[in-house]
Image 1 (cartoon, helix red, strand yellow):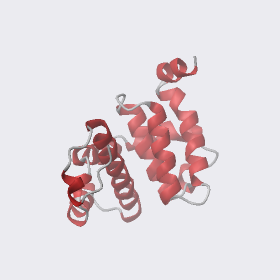
Image 2 (cartoon, one colour):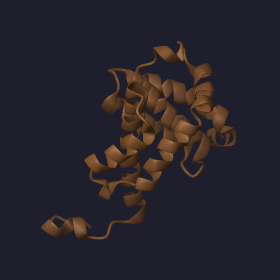
Image 3 (cartoon, one colour):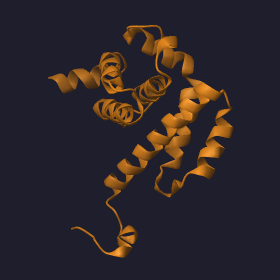
Length: 161
């Protein structure tokens, strides 16, 4: 059923679709916050507060946004160590946007088993298409394709059968 009248935003949305959409926005803002953290060196608390003030969080899974920031920050060393073997260049030479996307996606692969690995990869690719360099999405796809079997071996092998 399509709702085309003015109060359509008040209509209840199916939960799965709403959860997917609010998580996608949380990832988008999370990637931007991680980029800012990397570039500006501000504290994540300051960045999170700024993002919550500057953005309308009514359509954002705010808890997931917070989880991304805290998770990536506390596991940065382990995340970077997982990414490095999948790279064709030193981590320091990565585009900062692609690095933020890879860190977020790696955190999800490591910690959010409720999110299928193919969804994690697809979300990373979509972020790179919007925010990354011209062919950045191809690079992100290649790295995550190499990384997924390492972090989600059982899920990847079950999918390939």
